[in-house]
Length: 493
Ligand code: CS2
Image (cartoon, rainbow, N blue to C red; front, side, top):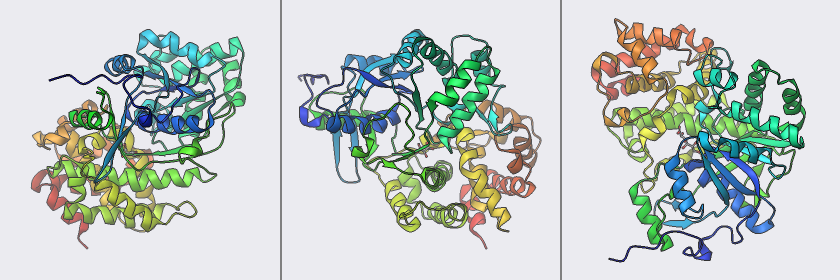
């Protein structure tokens, strides 16, 4: 058998390239080179540059994924996005990356790239946990070892330490303005990032001029990003090979749907992202809240209820009739009353579209992917809707069930076996939660200590005794009778 030719500038046919003329200069420095960035910002930017030109090549940095970066480099920094619909798939190659960097070794290069006057935007996909938000303190988590490390002036481990060094160098060299663009699922992602960064700088030595610069010469647009992008599996390598005729070792699977709504607040200019369908709007917050609760919040429910019911994928979970009843209830009765839809978007249409996106069996998104990092995702998704339910005189049963199911997925309370898909879920708070579980004499004590001691949820929610008790009630049913009975109980009148 002849081995297929590797993906490179020579082997990829030009009709697969989203961008025909590869950029020479870098205009965007991206932190967080993962699948989401490669299927979202990179695609929008390639489409914009293909039509309008400009110097918007992307230099992308990964904190630790050496394997991905060496594969990118071996493929001329090219990769394919395999767009998977329910019935058809296709592959495109964004061809937008000028350089890729990785790890502590490349930090000086990253800092120089951000300081370079040609760089106009620093974009971020560092996941919810990369912002180090303390729900209890409602600000930066100063007790986190990574933040302590960065404030001590050691080699930075967080975006704040990196940005502090890079912007200091930028000021020293020329002090040109720059935009920091968060592309993560964090409420008011731009404004929060600005606030957290300023808090960080306020504690760092000698950073007064930096704080002035950040306040006056750096913009932080809010944005809502959306595209379901699972992890890469061997089947995606095969799909990409079929579609490209060249072998890509690092393809990104993605649904065909994509959405991006953002504030037009770029102090140093930006690409014509509207060419790829980006929506520039003054209603970003409505888009964010709609997406964070209806899509992401309901997604978490599908992940935890699904994993405990033995479902490996999101479509399997979505097609489970009992889970679907809980899903509709949480969407229409617990999430929807907590938000206002952006102008021109109907809730019914948006929700039906979500159901069809979650039904994409060919995409096969995993419950373990969506269920990972619940400790940094759930507070943003469920806190306000739960508190508002009580304020309306209602009981947020399915929101409490979501939290109970998550805790039973990751806490190993009393030797409970949550099944293989729950065991695959990663969570930075797993150890802490297991410790609380292991030192609690009964389940109700565990749940109550979890809310009081972990600092994961805000004081308002943790202090809402009715919510703590409801979560405890469902956790108890899950542990004794299983998830099916718990879902039934949450649906009873
Ligand atoms: C998911 C998101 O991981 C999660 O919790 O809800 O990654 C989701 O797939 C994206 O936000 C879709 O845009």
